[in-house]
Structure formats: C-alpha cells, structure tokens
Length: 150
Image 1: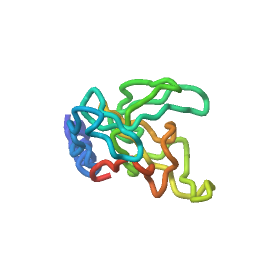
Image 2: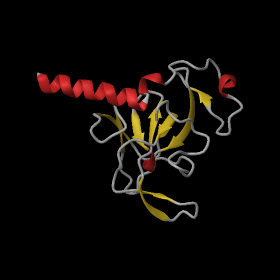
Image 3: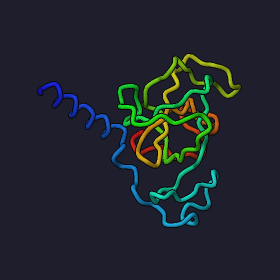
Image 4: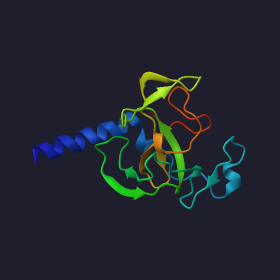
C-alpha cells in the first residue's frame, strides 16, 4: 500500500511539473474561436482548439495513446496508422522512444534524444515521432502550442 501511495504522489508531482492539469478544458465554441493561427486549427467536439495530424509508423502498426507522456503511462488505446488525431499542445519533456534522436536544421540526426509528445483532445498522449506534425525545432513543431510547464 505504501508503494502505491508513493507512486501516486510521484505521478501527481510529474503532472504538476509538466503542467498537464493546466491545459485549458474549454477554449472554443466554434471554429471561428480557433481562427487566425498558422495551422488552421479547428474547435473539437470537446471545445478545444486542435491541430489535426495523421498517425504514421514505419512498420504500419498502431501507436499507443497513453495516460502520461512516458513509457510508464498506461496504454489506453491503440490507434492505427493513417488515423487522424487532434493535438492540443506538445511537451518536449517526455520519454525517448525507439532510440530516436532530434534532427538539425539540415534534417541530419543529432545526439539529442527526441522526447516530444503530443497531448490529444481526449487528454491522452502520443509520441510525436509517429505523427505527421511539422518538423520539430528545438523540441516543438512550429505553430503547435507548448503545453503549460512543458
């Protein structure tokens, strides 16, 4: 029981550091509320401005939607390659997956771990390396909001 309490406290602290609970729950009523941004965001069914991108995996398999932006986060759903997901914001402070590394301005691999994760409209996370988002610059895709604290 003590271990479970420590784990829950640790997850709460992690959420606070990443600012997950600070992501607005309602920010739009219509697409006009999301207008004027470079990614042509739309108002989702959950009243959030989202940028929509597709899932792509090298092997054609699904991507895991997780509770947290890390490999320890419970997998809540698998999403097939080609599915469209609404991204609310990104954090560059998640776990590295598959040994991926960031690329430089010439699209050349660096030694910097790729740790960008996307928060979806349903409050679940996917690893950005499996999304068609714009090329990451210093941890984030241009035009996609940074998650508070992340």
